[in-house]
Image (cartoon, rainbow, N blue to C red; front, side, top):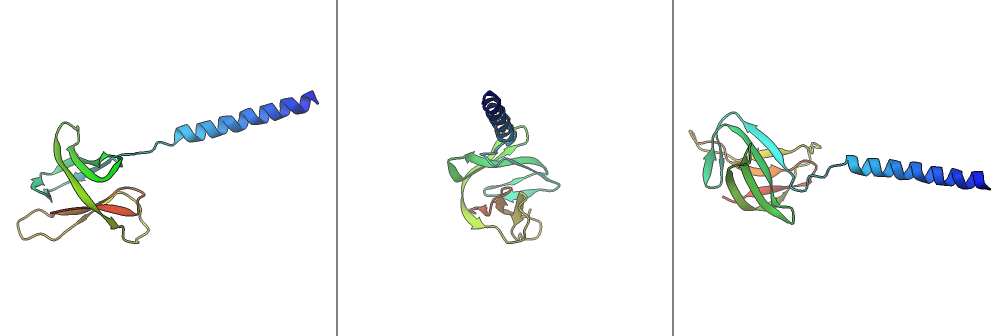
Length: 127
């Protein structure tokens, strides 16, 4: 009977160990932080961003439609704005991506929608 008891304890320890390592390996990105690099200027509501790398993220994970755009080093905030939710097109690709709108000649293309990775909805900027 003692051997059986020890076998149950050992099995429980192994299962507990497996479950704890699986949960600590998964990092959840609550702010949906995404880095985008642009090789030319792009437009956002109220201004134009020069070529460079920018951070797109939720300003507050509890307010899912408030988006913030920052410099790569996070020292400058370019935009904090409310957005509207839009459905992601059914392309099968769930990578983080941007959708651009049309722009007139000589003007930078406007970012219309940010689709965070692995989400079925995007955040449409209000112009």
